[in-house]
Length: 136
Image 1: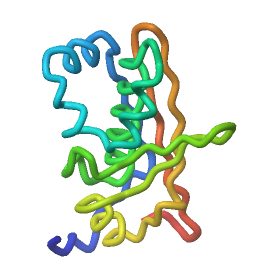
Image 2: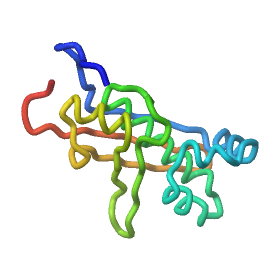
Image 3: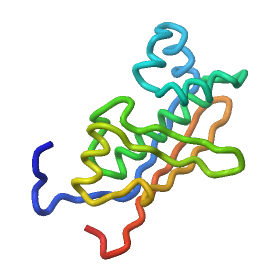
Image 4: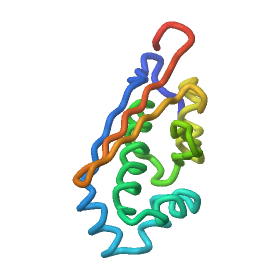
């Protein structure tokens, strides 16, 4: 990964909304899209629900929100994994190019917080990056 300009700005907050109907249409039209966009654990999590498209939409919104908060855009489709443990808030694991980018701008996985919500129609995710020092 190339070096960033000295004045590169990390937004530290990102939000995204995904239409659940469009997600369902994409999943039904192109079933293999699951493997391109999501990790095996994410697929297992989403597929156990009756309205699986809502959970996929929430995870996709979270991936987009994380990339927006980092300021990198979605440079790798499955470079952000949303992990959910029972009775705990979801959190993320970064991989590949997105992990490399986060290291380059000084962001650790434990600095990243996400929140996801969904309804019948849409899923929304917010990401916040916590910094110990002054903002970049």
